[in-house]
Image 1 (spheres, rainbow, N blue to C red):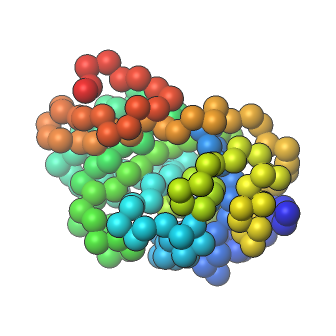
Image 2: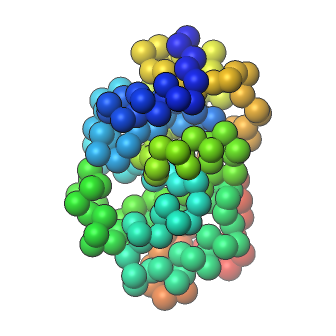
Image 3: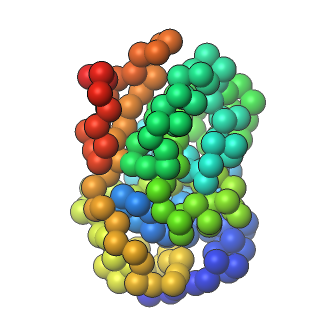
Length: 193
């Protein structure tokens, strides 16, 4: 297991390597958006399955949200973030040029984890996925993760604080004031089906 400190983790991200870090739900593997193809390769993930953009605060994420969904996004963010809610929203025109996927939507989230927020505040928004090979169970400890992804650096210090072990709830923006649930998870949102 290769545990690295905050400074070295930021250097690794800058040269295109991913880093595994703890969040409030499940440990994540993350990289800078322009290097996202590495996560697909390491995880053996289907290229058609999008990654989630994590930020430390709304200021880092607002520019990624298309203006048509911005008010609804800000409302939900003010009620549920930081926390285990991922919102799928239309992507802004400005950010399409730096986003790896051809998708017109993007899942975004702010984790309720001091470690994750501090790290992402310094790195900038990170494209993320659960820290496991696609299709295999997700481990919640650095030791177990290192068995499945032995060549990916892990942000220390470890042991990490305990995470919930349950994936985030995912909702998708439909239109003005309307959302739909894509995946039930750690948080329930009244009035959304």
